[in-house]
Length: 174
Image 1 (cartoon, rainbow, N blue to C red):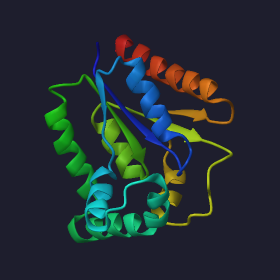
Image 2 (image 1 turned 180 degrees about the vertical axis):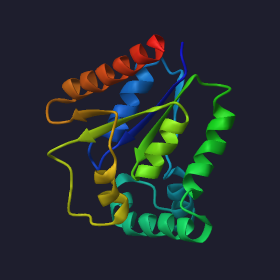
Image 3 (image 1 turned 90 degrees about the vertical axis):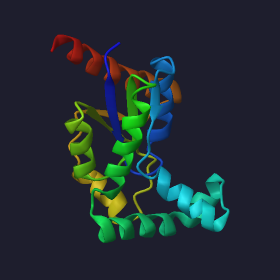
C-alpha cells in the first residue's frame, strides 16, 4: 500500500473527526490520526481535569488561547513541528497519517510538503459564529478536494472515501 498523508480542514463541527474515522476504517487501521490540537487538549485537560465533549465547548477559548500563545512564543510552526516529530515515530507502525484539524494555510502547506493531500469539508450545519483566527483562517485554505457534508452520515462517509480513492489513484499514476 502507498503511504497516504491526508489533511482535513473545515470549521468546527464540519465533520473532520467523522471523516478521519471513516478513512482509518477504509485503510483497515493501517493509518493513524495526528491532531495538531492533541497536545493542546492534553495540556489543558491536565490542568483542568475536564475531559468530555461538553467541557471542550466550555474550554474552547482556553484551548484557542493556549494554542496561539505557544505559536507566538515559539513560532507559528510549533504545533506542526510537534506533529512532525510524532509522525516520525509513528510512520514505522502505520503506512498512512490523517491530520484531522488543519486550520491555517501553512498547515495545509505542511501536509503537501509531506506529499499529502488536503480535503476541505463544508457543512451548512457548521457554526460560523466563532471569529477566532483558528476558525476564520480555514476559509483561506485552498483544498485539493472539497466535500460537502450536507446529507446523511452515510453519504458523507462515501464522499470522503471517494476523495481518498481519487488521491490513491493519483499516487499510483505518478
